[in-house]
Length: 306
Length: 334
Image (cartoon, rainbow over all chains, first blue to last red; front, top):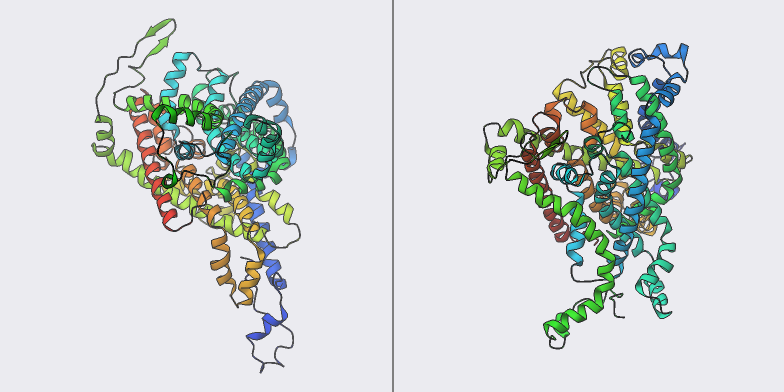
């Protein structure tokens, strides 16, 4: 995009108008350089995009400071009476800490089980070719395509029979079923970038494949594991459909369900909703920024190696 | 210890000595591959139990007339057994060709296809544009990148509520439009604008993933290729067309496929933007199926599951064609 450099506006062009104009710019400009206009356009574009990315979140924060639930209709009124009353209310008089606890149990449970299970599979498909390899890869991809509609009804029945409705296990297991295949894929890409010679060295030293995996490969794959863990975590935190359907007791709601309770058909307490949303968003975004450098490499490893 | 560490030693059937007997083959296979099978066993078990079994059961459900009135349920201490019965392919017949087929299935199908195509195109084009801008040498690059991944960092269900507030009838967006003397659409009531809003919000949520993946892809392109192209006198457009795009092929093919699958099945955005029962015409097939199964009384489990089977078939067909197309164009990285 930004390489579209504007036509060279060299000063004194008029004097040398007779010279072959087409050859001039290439002679004076090297690769990677752009005119000042190009830089300005680049910044304008990026600032604009950043604003669009930022505004909905910032707006939520702004509304969370206003005391009335209708303040979103008259944002100007908020300025005079900003405060953190909504936050105090949410923390003291709603199920916020219950929701926090459920979300953490579900998300961390999904992360631990999911990453462990995905890591061994990722390693196996990265290093070994065995009968059934192709179908396995195909299934891993296809489970991404499973619409909740096909699983949610039978799972509701099955969990109902097992007495798992309204338990954390139900959500952890379901989240694993969606997060594990993609994590395995992601980790396969990451393991592919670790030289095979390391495995061979381990083998020469008498380690079994399991030993190689646990002692040599896992420590080396830490950034990849971090990405997979993060993916599992946000998938579990952000899951809406199953959490809405399977969690009946309001002390077991996850954030995704709890947040909906502020907005019922009859009444919408947007101010409390906004405050809760900000409380949820802050730790998650901080966590995100801590791992986002790894995220680029992790995603790319998975992406380029397929 | 002959676990196939080396990929080059794949099966090469032509050069093998005569095959040993079945028992011997099984034994050999077991010795060769048991590590691999032990390692994939957890995933196979998890997927088999949590996806395979419900899938089979869900498929059976589509052949019955199950709903919340005749399914097994417990009311207080009384357990009532399921009384639904097998009705064959009637559900599919009804969904695809029944009297309400257009209103309920085909109109949603068309909208879902349009939604997927529009969203993935927007994700890819905007994501690529931003990735190329971020790939430049530029002051403040890190800050821009941090700001631009924000929509991804904050959980979707949080930001969708924020959009809902902004898009409300007298919300901030319409106030701004009003101040500029522009028309103020009823974002959350009018079918056209509901669809417009849904695509807009989903685009906003989905661009960061594309942007980061493509940025990684751009950074892995060898810069000497650009220099060579420039030496040969390639214009900016030609460099983009013949160096950048081919360099991104493997990343693109992966993220576009994932984008299509994820967008096609995108549940949270539409469900939360319009509420559980709102906007019947802006529902895509997934949310519509959820509505049939859980949003109405009595809950129609059988039809909901039948929608699920149809959705999965559509995606499976799409994915196999997509792979075939990639293979034909030699773009497959796997």
